[in-house]
Amino acid sequence: MDMSFGELIGFVRQSKDVNGIIKSVHDMFDVANLVTLVPGIVKFMQLPFIYPFVAPKPTDKAGMGMLRNVADKAVEARIEKGNVKNRRDLLQQFIEYRSQDGEALTRLELENEALTPM
Image (cartoon, rainbow, N blue to C red; front, side):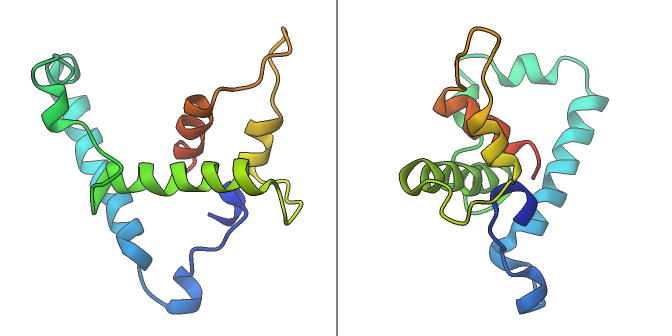
């Protein structure tokens, strides 16, 4: 997380899986396996009458939703406080990115990109 958000989570210092983040990453592998083994399951899960019930939510206590919450909070803190540690982490790179037209990433794009390196 230090490379991604410029903040330590505390895995080494506390010698444990802080807030179940490591378990949540491992749980994502199970979902990824299912998605790759069952063609069409993603399209099925994205149906409007199913997606709200199966989609990860930032309020989830584990899994992809919880990881989304971690990433969203990191983006929010960086936008509100700026890069107070003057770090060259991935999040700062995403914030400074500009398209060929000079457009910055939207907040949603920043949150999605911040989730990727986890």
